[in-house]
Image (cartoon, rainbow, N blue to C red):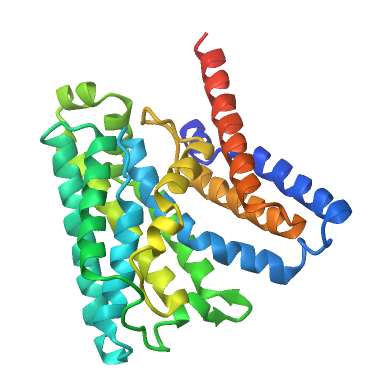
Length: 320
């Protein structure tokens, strides 16, 4: 019973989420338009958080294994371009296009995992290198918006079931599946073990390389799903859609703010979801208050530093 209670304990980041939301409401009430709590704005905020949320779920897996993936933004761009290029506005081509981009994602994740686990290249350098290769190939092949997605596929980005956008349900579904895998499967247990100490896990008989490779494949697959969502919103893909969204850095930031340790072995997708929503609230509040674009980045960076610092201090206090 105690073990189950620990598993479902609410991450501390939700206290930060409440503080951020209340602060945003108060600031908007006095200095903004006073509309941040309207159902329309809140729904739009959650929809804008979907892309970051999906890729952050996959980033959680690799960071739990004490790795990292900086290629996700470039893979999102590849997915968006290739999906629209292959679909060409024809609904009959959608299954082939979706299968193709997921195959590309699996291959990229496999390469990342192999370079990190077999060649022992630092994950930061390995995944950045793979990302730059993807960027080079993409920029050499395409220069602007290419292809088109059929209207039926745009349902992913704009469709609703009742009052709830389908994209939000997709994010919740990905979160539930990720939480189940981490907490209720053997792979999830092995992932935490490898992140806690890869050497101990290896000496305990775990095939640590396979765990790391699979974590990177999962991360790449979520990046592909994010790319499909993005292109369904834009209706066409371009080489810069992933990098302009800063999905690599922001997904890492959301995971860290959510409480997942950079050293691996600690954290989960529940905290990541809260981190994503915090970023969504900040963006919405900044827009409502008319904050300058460059000042937004300063404030977001400061909040990230403060959040990570608070976790570091608390961890040191617990250790002592």
